[in-house]
Length: 336
Image (cartoon, rainbow, N blue to C red; front, side):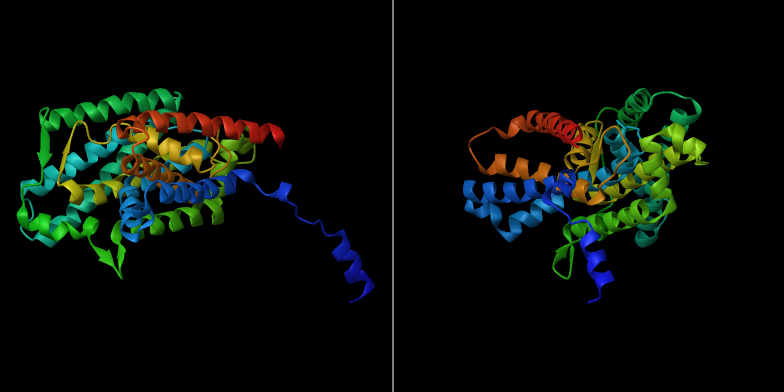
């Protein structure tokens, strides 16, 4: 080892515990802690079947939270995702019930494409109204939340919309209840969607633009970034993630109504914030959002298996979690 090598090694800064981003580590530490608590509460909690069921049930919120990570990272917020799920699912089931295509396989493909297209258009509408109309996304998506929920109520006439094609039901059911190489398909979909989203957010120019826009729109604009385009695409990604969640949701129950997806926006935002993404924008953690969705489902599962807290208080617990997560984020920012 030469003297120059020795000097460069000495000059290289050493990473300490303080250099670790606690917001990135905290969700996974909390997940491990919950697994330990769950095992102490009920030995059956840690069983493979129970954990698979928990991960499978978290698929809807986890996938929606991936899209919410893009929106929140760009400095915006989407409150319409729960109503959007109900609306997209209703249109998908109505199309399959119409019998417009005789071949069941082609009907499923066409229905899936319809759901993806409608989800993307709903996200595009949110993005364009927000950016071109120069309206706060909170107000825009609050309005579209009512629009999507009202349209679903109108389509269902206040009742439920149920898939009435037995052959389609039998063919579609494995998408949620099936498995590949022993792994439930919804879990595979979660990680495929998260991997693609992580690549886009961390490895592409668009991902860097999302973070830049969320950090400071003025600076991003002066840097030559098309701010409105970046924000609109983030809303479209959110709509696509909602559509993918619908593709998993419909075969689970084969039915939807005006009450479908209620409070899913709260759960998705909570998962994103618990996962370490700053609600003010400027940072995004895809895998943290997935971890946050798992945490929410694990909390509900522990409440179900224990007698300490009523399972009917799950909404209260989730609301408390997001407030605590925001307080923790603020304290970490002050320390840094």
